[in-house]
Structure formats: C-alpha cells, structure tokens
Length: 103
Image 1: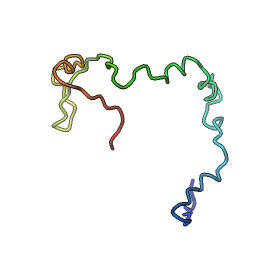
Image 2: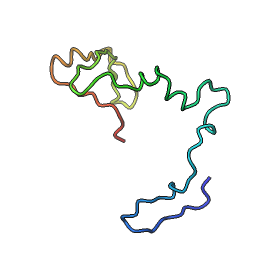
Image 3: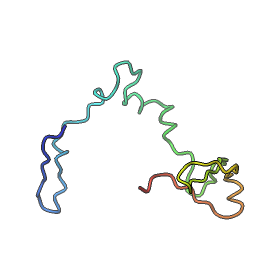
C-alpha cells in the first residue's frame, strides 16, 4: 500500500525513477508453494519456448478460421446466424488482422 507519493523534480533529461531504487523482483512471492515449476523453469522449458516463438512472418498467409458474426448495435450480443470465414473474405478483398487493444 502506498502511503505517500513522492515526485522526482529532477531535470527533464533525468530518466532515473524511484523504481531504480527498488529491490529485484522476487518471483517466489508470486508463485504458489505447490506450483510444479517456477518462472525461471518455465523460461527454460523447450515446450514453453516453442509456444512463445512466432510461426508466421509479415506477409505469410494467416491461418484460416471461421467464427460466428454478432450484432452489438442494440448494446447486447445478438447472433446474426452468419459466419465470418477468413479465406472467403480474403478472396474478395485484402484483410488486415489486428491483435491488441486500442483503448
């Protein structure tokens, strides 16, 4: 819990922050005692490394998928009875897939 917020009124070019004075992160505090693996174990696990490694590059074809289309114009999720199929849409015009949040 933060009791008081301190502001560093250094020069604009001074990039040092209060977090520089914090001790190193201790993953043991965030890992349940019964956890079979610690975060360092996970980063060394070849399966986890494989899952973190991108299998596509810019310009590669995207994996095809089909999903139901919903109408949210009323403020509620309403099924339209139609589906969006990536391969069909890509045959009609270019499609951009954006992953992330813009909020």
